[in-house]
Length: 216
Length: 216
Image (cartoon, rainbow over all chains, first blue to last red; front, side, top):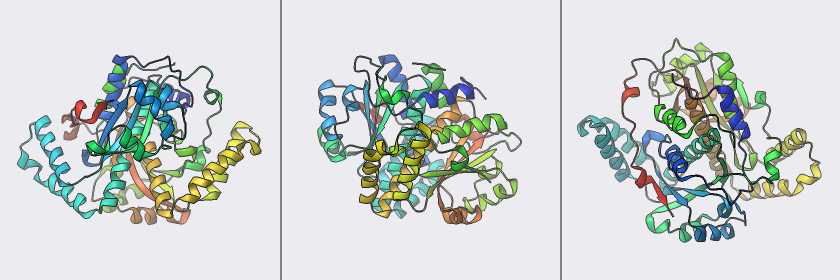
């Protein structure tokens, strides 16, 4: 088993992480770091590997400035370095199963016939779900990507702030997501904390381990 | 900004990660590693910090052996080292807001009165949601914990397998979750891959970066 950090270091990094309320707008994540960190999103696990998502990274200052108005005036979208909008596909169905099957063939070289069983299983799952249930299922997968992204960023000293407090329809319109067939679900600001963000120094509030973990 | 690994190392670990289909049943995660790794769950971010969850860690071989029957006969629950069932609270309401407020007071020493605004905001959010919407919201938070846990495990060379394919009601009953007021949402097996798990050597299938990431 390879390991590039000790468990102690890992946990220190996760303790260091917090929901950054005030980013330093002058500090940008270097492009070569960011392009790698994006892979934490690309590589995120999802149910059946279906990747029912797209990640929109807002970097244009003119766009970023318009986001707080639709985010209860939170400044993070404007002041962070890279602002990620995690979006689900508005329509999700059999075509998405075939898209994945074709990609498996392309990447692995497996004969398409050998994937018939897997394809049938996925089609069965997708066809049994109502549109609402598919949406809930797909939304859940985005939160895996969010969790992986925040943990990954923490291990390399990049700050983040997850955000559910925004008007998704306004984001969809402003960023052109709806026209592309996507819908914003949750966001994550990334960058570096301002030296005077008072929240950084506050003790992290978690329930006692014995309250949230139970051994069976 | 502290950082205990480089972004290159991080991404190598995330590429090394895969949904382990065959665990080596003889390899157990050492207790001192596991107790730390549990903190990746405890420290996971959640909306408002409400932590609407409990993590049940199944280690008893007799219990683990019974799980595949309710998991489409997947062997991971039985063969892995530690099997985590991520569960939401069946009832979630104003009492959970007050529980968090009390914990903030306990951990930070902030006067309770100073938290009235925050409390009111959380109560407003919770009271505006239907039971179904609260459940969807809380379920989403569990997937953040799942994502953080899998990414964290990968950085220290621990294998995982996320699992949605199980009969939640049977798990609730067998593990006694329902009696404790919880409901299983998603699971994650953790341990070490068997040397002959064919899935480990397969290329990871992800859509091309330019298909899932778009810069705005």
